[in-house]
Amino acid sequence: MIPGIILMLLGLVIHSQLHDLTFIQQQLLGYLPPLLGGLAIILCISFNQGRLLLTTVNLLCLFLLIQNQLQSSLSQPANFVLFSCLSLLFPLLQLFINFIPERGLSSRWLIRHLPVIVSGYLFFWVAAQNHLLSDWFDGLPMGLIQMYSDPYLLSQWAVSLFAVTTLLGLIILWFRATLADACLVIITVTIAAMLALFSKSSISVLCSTLGLVLILFTVLFNSYSMAFIDELTGLPGRRALENTLRSAGRHYTLGMVDIDHFKKFNDTYGHDVGDQVLKMVASQMKQAARGATVFRYGGEEFTIVFKGMDEVRAIEIAEKVRTTIAAYPMRIRDKNRPENEKQGRQLRQRSGRSEDTAEVTISIGLCEKTRAHKDSQAVIKQADEALYLAKRQGRNRSVACHIAQPRTRRAATS
Image (cartoon, rainbow, N blue to C red; front, top):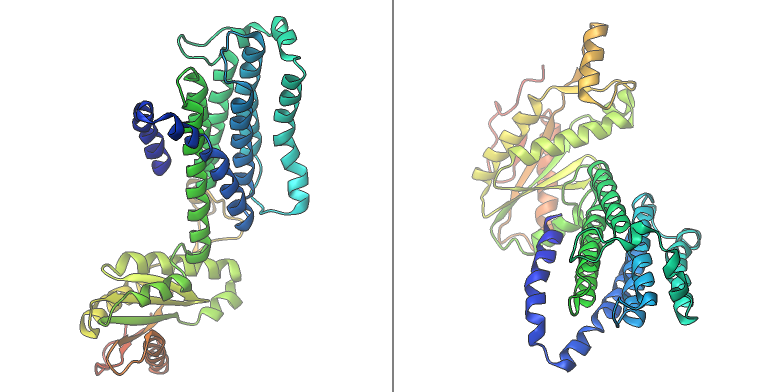
C-alpha cells in the first residue's frame, strides 16, 4: 500500500504546479493516460495479470468518456446525469473485479469478463451521442441528486458505493495479501477523490495518470516477484542468485546447503510435510544468516552468499545456521488440524496429545572465491563438492574447501 499512498500524496504536489504549464504542455499531458493505458494493457497481457488488465480498462474507459463528454459544466442536465451514472459505474465495476480470482489470462476468461467492463461505458457513450441523457434527469433518484458534502461533487449513493467497494477491497487484501489487491484499493480511493474534486482543472488527467503509473508499477513488481522470488519459501530464487553473483565482486564466499534425508520426509509424511520442512528451513536460515543472503537453489537445496567474507567468517555464520535448524522442534501438522493456531491448540488440549515432532538437519559446503576460480559457476561447483564431502562424513555439518575440518564439528543427532 505504501508506494501507492506516496504516489497519490505526490499527486497533490503535482496538481498545485499544473497551472504553471503552458497550453501546449497541458495538451500533451492529456495524451499520457491513453499512452500509459496502452502500455499497461500490453504488460498485463504479457505477464498474465488479468485483474489488473480489467482495472486498466475500467480506468481508461472512464477517462476517455470524461474527456469526450464531460468537458463542459455539470449544470447541464445531460452532463450531470452522465457524471452521476459514472460515479456509480466505476466503483461497481471495481467491486466486480475485486471478487474475481486471479487465474491468469485466456481467451475464454477475457470473453467472460471484458465485456462486463466495456459494455457499461459503451452504453452511456451511445446514450450521450444520441442526446438521451438529458431526458433521464427528471427520473434521477434523490440519492444521486443530493451531494454528500458541499463542495464535493459525489452524491450520497456514490459515496456509499465507493465506501463499500473500498472496505470490501481492504478485507480481500487482508486475506489474499497481493500487490494487485492493494493496487485496486488505492485506485478506487484515487478515483473517488478525482470525482469529488471534479471541478478542479486537469484533475481527471492527473488522477488517471497516477492510477495507471501505479498499475504499471504493480505489474512490473509482480513480474519481478514471479521471476526472482520462490513462491513456496519467499526466498530469492536461482535467477536472483545469478544476478547477485554477477555483482558480488571478487571477494565472497558461497555456501551450498542441502536438507538431510529430505526424501524420507516426503516418503514418510507426504509432500505437504515436505513443503512445511522447506518453509521452516528457509525461515530459520533467513533469520540466522545475518549479514548474508539466502537463496533457494532448487528442490531441497539452498545457497548462502557471504559478500565480502572469507571462509573463516562465513563458516561461523554457517555453523550458527546449521545449529539453529538442528535445535528447532519441527512439528508435524495433522492432516485434519485446523489452520487457526488457537483452534489447533484447543483441539490438542482436548485430545490430550501433542503434535508429532521431527528433527531436521542440514549439511553445508562452503567455498571462498579465489583467483583459481574462472567464474561463479566454478565457485558453486567447488562448494557442491564440499557439500558432498559433508554428506559423506555423516551429514549435519559444515565443510569449507580451504579450511581443515575438525572431527568434532558435528552436532548430536538425537
